Length: 282
Ligand SMILES: [Zn+2]
Ligand SMILES: [Zn+2]
Image 1 (tube, rainbow, N blue to C red):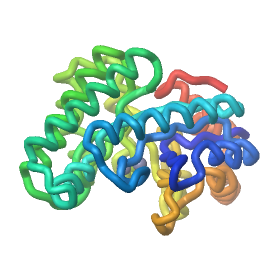
Image 2 (cartoon, rainbow, N blue to C red; image 1 turned 180 degrees about the vertical axis):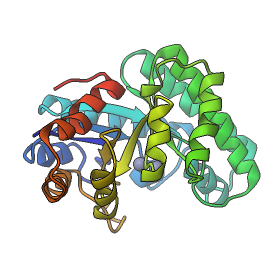
Image 3 (cartoon, rainbow, N blue to C red; image 1 turned 90 degrees about the horizontal axis):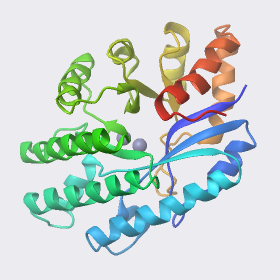
Image 4 (cartoon, rainbow, N blue to C red; image 1 turned 30 degrees about the vertical axis):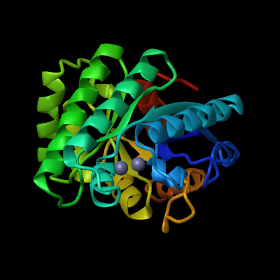
């Protein structure tokens, strides 16, 4: 069997960069999606838009190296909802200037999607923790703008959202319909809870589940193959308690033996669902 990691991060400055793909490849990994981090995870100083631009260019370069060593790679960059809180609390920016920065960043990312340098925009969405309402409003404006670009330039979206279970899915569906996006498979609910998966699938979206034992135990035991698996690896040594992309194949194999899962099922979650979302084949 060949394995996919549908959502990881990459940091060539503080972390391993494309060497993740080398390790992943030697464990039967064939596909990985690398999502941007936040600029302060890369650089010690922060210079607004320039820092985002510099980080994304590093990331694109690293994705290219990953592709060159033979791991099919999708590069996706966004404006993470948590960035909004960081910029207001730590950088002391005003909420309205954070909104302007976020819009400028995703406009730049949309232009890279148009040129074919990025596969899509993500993570965008809403904070998964309680925060001030003006900050959630900023997240929502950026999300809706990202959906408009996704429609215009046919790019993907990786959603990072609050956890209101199936209600989160139905609320997002409203925004996606408003943006008039037909191919909803390109919209990925990242870090989806197992209880959200049936709703996500029935509305035509894609989902990634976190590849930890606790989650794999539920999805591989209970559910049809309607999801992809992610490591959400931060590629930053200062982040503790992580799942490594190159561990996913062993974990998935372990649980599929435990629950007598057939090859067809495994092929669906590791290959077919990747193709439906990313339009990439082995
Ligand atoms: Zn996330
Ligand atoms: Zn992530």
